[in-house]
Image (cartoon, rainbow, N blue to C red; front, side, top):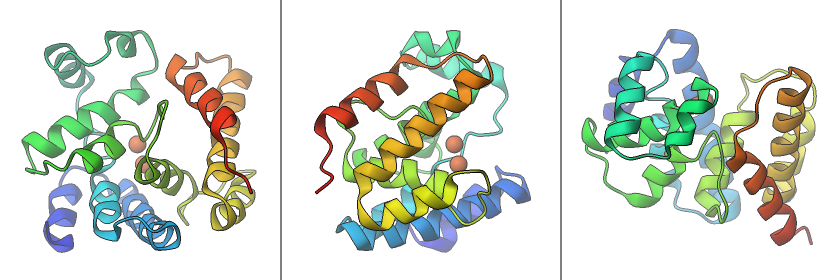
Length: 189
Ligand SMILES: [Fe+2]
Ligand SMILES: [Fe+2]
């Protein structure tokens, strides 16, 4: 899909703030794709649609999770997680994107998963470090992302888990599984 067409579809679904975030994720994802030898067009499309479902009513997201037989344990955890798999579903059903790699990058951009592809890692990271993000530790991850994708991802997952723990919030099990998988298989040379 042409970039302008995709952006127009997404803009209608988002607040101006979230749309600007999406543009930041897109630029960052394209640059990481170039750096790590991944299809830039796929990175662009996944980035544009990654938050497509962000503002859908909770009830609609819940219904899609049940109907599409997505992992039902999602419903027991923070609803912030829901827009990722629901976004993958709506990106296919409403925007007509069928590329599995793109859809999976959208699906796992919040939780991560065991055995993430490079494209999935890039979208997860781009979401975390895009230029509009300002929080303690983000610059460290930005620097790492230029040197080693896995090291940057490990740091961002660690930060996310620590953030949730400090706020007395639950951590979705897949996030722990992602962390363990990255540590076991990291290539930091
Ligand atoms: Fe998101
Ligand atoms: Fe996002």
